[in-house]
Image (cartoon, rainbow over all chains, first blue to last red):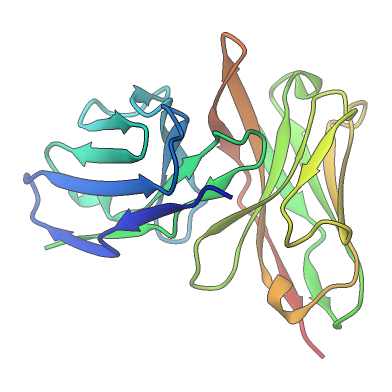
Length: 108
Length: 122
């Protein structure tokens, strides 16, 4: 089974600053990776699929990059409403999906 | 509005059974593959099960294979998860999620319900 590991576990960033979240796959997953945002008390929300394609309605400050085993979610200018846990998900073994353990993003 | 609403959660004893439902509205339910995903208290997301739009094929995570069964009734626009032989570690918030495609390629789980809570305890 291909696992995905996210880092850091917690990230504290000031409003207006850049946030960079990492997801690493244990084997090559090509660009078969998605990112989700889960705000407190809410269901997850799809942000990015195919490693770098923003889902409908996702603000342009969210961007995804990477391929193979190393992926990054970048929030270019952090806003207070971005407080959330962010999960990566690989689907290289579709439809056997695997989520990472999440990165909690705190606002300084 | 596109919406998924889960129901059927509750308190059940270890070894017991429960059937979760997910009612879909606002979209052509039979055109979409569906999934169940759960989240234990304070923990991350765990994918559990997948079903094709017609219901002809299903896949499961190893953690629930042989105990859980995913099914759907397209006429009722509903998704189900039959859970048997429940264990304490199955205690979680259970979400149903719609899978979407772009040019026949997976494009993420784009619609989620708010979840239904299952507690397995004596």
